[in-house]
Image 1 (tube, rainbow, N blue to C red):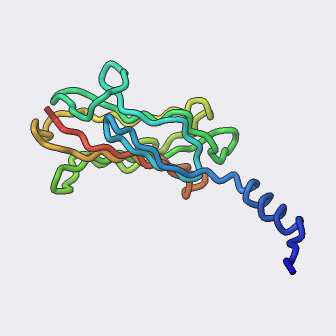
Image 2 (cartoon, rainbow, N blue to C red):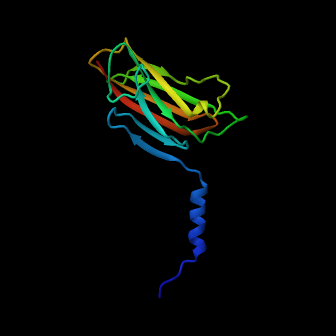
Image 3 (cartoon, rainbow, N blue to C red):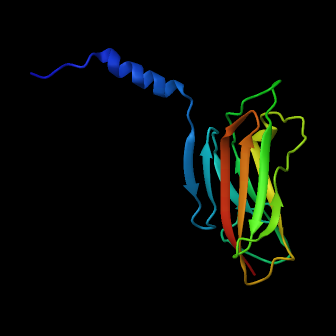
Length: 162
């Protein structure tokens, strides 16, 4: 004889899971190699742009130019006084893992942002000395919510300098 599981035992766990407001995932752009993971935030997309703000289709970057990792549609901040308080670190390392650029928090000391302004964040890197043509560099951008530090987005890409 089959035991019947009361319907209430199925509804309660489903309700608990749905009410957690959990958001996590991983995505990768195979044309540039840019990948991003997110936990606690919602994210529409992340992409690599060149100096003219157009989305790149390659990770080959000319020396003496600028690129940026852009993360768009960021949501689910914990607000304080109706403001979001993002943190943003940006690091660039060479093939030997030596830091070429290391900014711990580009938004240190700010007084918060509207949710609209905090929904699109970018980390810009000038591809110049001490970087060298023919070398590969790893760019890592980390975004976090200063009011809920476990919420974070990590975007990473390897670039080949031409």
